[in-house]
Length: 218
Image 1 (tube, helix red, strand yellow):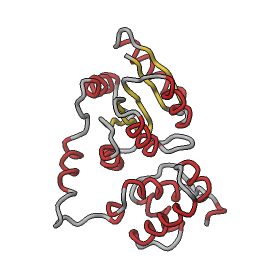
Image 2 (cartoon, rainbow, N blue to C red; image 1 turned 90 degrees about the vertical axis):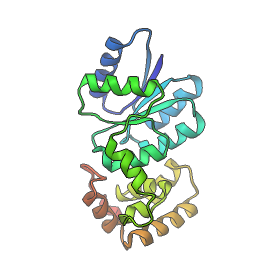
Image 3 (cartoon, helix red, strand yellow; image 1 turned 45 degrees about the vertical axis):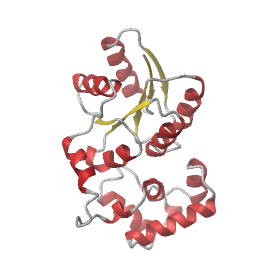
Image 4 (cartoon, one colour; image 1 turned 180 degrees about the vertical axis):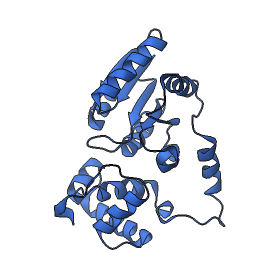
């Protein structure tokens, strides 16, 4: 079995490697601390599983998930995050992840999640699965960000971090003019006028942790 760990925190990455090497026989593990490096490794390696954090330098984890499921549909992806499951698991589910796991879980739960995904089964909580069913009900009132497409949601997160349009366009591989169109749609759907308001909205929703808005974006 060949696994790629995509995680920018070295201590957690190395700890996860030790857990995997202890519980699995005949395992090969490669590591990447940057989304672009992960994609480079995948060009020349066939992985059975990718363990990936949502917060990564460069391309954000959701966009990387989107790229992996598009380019390598046979590779299973298990998302790891410090964010609670209900914050990002629905987006991860829709973008093709096989599971979502909080990084604070203990080793037995991590191994259980990995074995579940390797078997081809989903590893999401009952609450997430129920929310995925409920969101299709026309009579259910949705939060403003649920009106966004998955792509708009990913862009929203990057704008809220204070990244420039040029940087976001490059990381998300889209023309700047197209990005401006998406940005306008996002602002209109959220009924928000400024980047500061967008940042505050994402903080209030729990989408940003320890992320301050750069002064040049205010």
